[in-house]
Image (cartoon, rainbow, N blue to C red; front, side):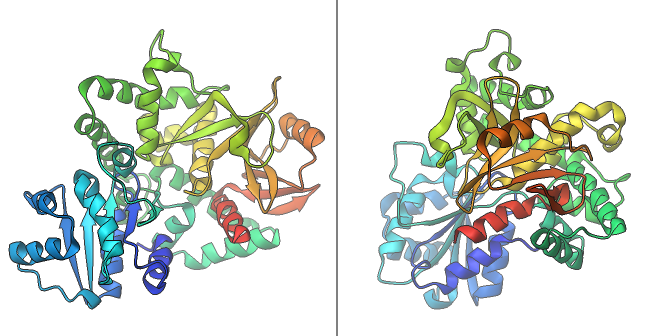
Length: 442
């Protein structure tokens, strides 16, 4: 399946300034890191060596005696009978978070006079990097984050490249798509809400011919169980209990009109001091995303964050439907209106998230609240999210009157358009806010 991260990998390979540094791809489990790096190596090198620290007994031992690249490769040649032509061979270290000394060795691969082509992946590198008992090679590694597939990648996977191109054109021009195409995309968006962007889940959807009625949701349950198993594997029992409680509280946190994170929803009497490290673990593992509140929408937004006021979103909206135990029929029923707002907001968080930006929302001291605000092309832009066609918004009106932004964005079921300084962005095109933002900042 085609992923956008491939363009960055190819740029790394072709750039003499970048490719001296090992390329490190981090992200939550099962977002496709191993698949994309294997595909990259196969397409761009004559050979590649794949080394997985999690399922290869004894591999860690090679790094215990020496961190010198020549010593490491010599031992690999002896142990695995590898013939390594450095110029044409990529070295792929997978699940590198398992071996702290292998992470440290990346510094020496970078500094070597030999131009090694090293790529690596890890599911809990955010956790490993946070440890203090080993040296992380700061400035010696080219790091990037892989997230679940966004809606455009979902369209690519379903062979709808032309449709994705039409969305891009309409977003840039603010010209409405024909009604029948708009409706088709809204239907596909609803399927995406349920399936999500985890590659295994998308593959399961494709294998049943995109028939949502026979799609096997158990693949999402397996991913959630794997996440819970990781919590047990990489934490103490006491830490694991707290992390799992926070994780399982996410549907309750988001399924309220006021969905600011509440410790009391984790368990009765819970306090920040007891659970803040559990939240930090989930954030650093890329399993959840934190969206911080700001009272003053000024640049840089991070300076104006209000401590202890934040929301937590799950890394994938399909996993959120599963964690909430929602079937597809549940999700689209009228009775699930509040939860449709929860799913929509989490979906937008996923589409906006990138490694270069934190997520923020704005709330006044009274009742006005803007779902997301973002610095775009030098301006703070309010982003209002609607799960339906409704465009009434007292909060947006309050914000505009108070701060007079350059323009506003409203994401909803409505078609493209630009009226009264409000850019109408259909839900299925929300990923483009991040991409246009990034392009304008270059």
